[in-house]
Length: 263
Image (cartoon, rainbow, N blue to C red; front, side, top):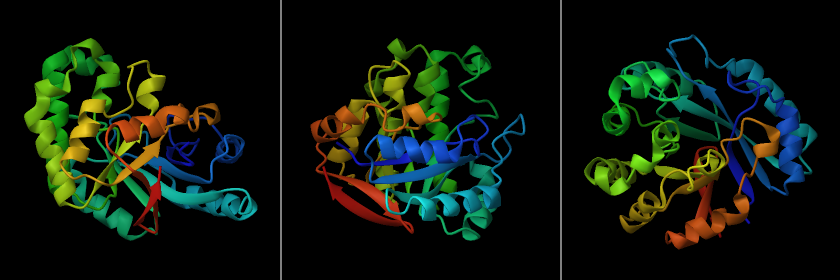
């Protein structure tokens, strides 16, 4: 079993009501050795949500890190909502913090979150996917201070999933993966896709396998939990998913340095 969940949210993120201490307790109950909290920081989110109170979050995390030091390793992370024009502000923000781990993610395209019905209502299923993948490439071309790219096909959670075949978007996905590898960045296995009933974890197994075939080695594992009960969600099969795609190791970041752990 994978023993590190490195994509988790608590009530410091606008879309969670779970107390951070409850998340830590849930991780201990789940038998994890490592838990990295990665609260949302999405600048310019249209509703004004997802602006992280970083000081309060860090203070509580450090308190819990000391309190539970004999039971679990607690790491300080963040999930940045990337948009290409935000790069200068994101560099300034991350330079001021000593994060263990930074996830870069795409949550908005043209100011709209695919979570909102408006997104596919405006762009349609096929073009909605194309615009999302195009935005990832733009984001990573503008900003590089992250460790892995999060839930690479997040957009599919809210589309007509049956219409998604990675091979239909091979060129752009291939370009994204090659650029991430050239940048020395990784991707994550995000089990929330299973929770949402897609039938696969993010990214799709074809994408995961192609990343490995291209030489990608950095792969973290996260539940993307917003409730304590979802921490380590389907981690009992995560190792099989990784080995089926050709991985022998998964990764945990401490002070932005990758530690490769045998599966």
